[in-house]
Image 1 (tube, helix red, strand yellow):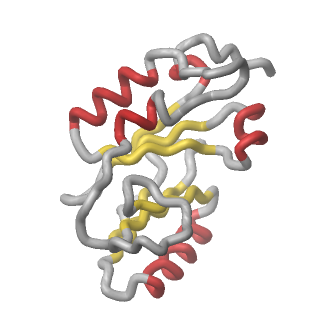
Image 2 (tube, helix red, strand yellow):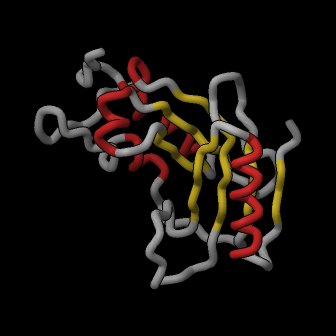
Length: 160
């Protein structure tokens, strides 16, 4: 199915918001990438971590516009919706399991890491890493793995 990238993102990128379920946890907005994009980038979802209402408004505004395309077929999320919530973040480490806000969406495991200039993993806002899981059991296994990697970080599990 062809995607018209000249249309606003919200017309071709369905999103779901995962509310921060306790004080200090950010909201996550997850977008399900259309097949041509997901195949090209090797993942099914695009995620944004929202810490403030101003960021939420900026992301909503960015999703209501077409994505920047510096050349045809090349999508530039960084100057589009990513710019709305890309400021470096600070805070204590944690590991959290977010349940899907509605059917058809994955479980999310979000971890916040302490500062480390040597870090080689994909990280957002200088501290966050998230992964999506179709099955709760797989998400819980990742939660346990991360809890072992961050032994001093609290683990938060959203009631489902």
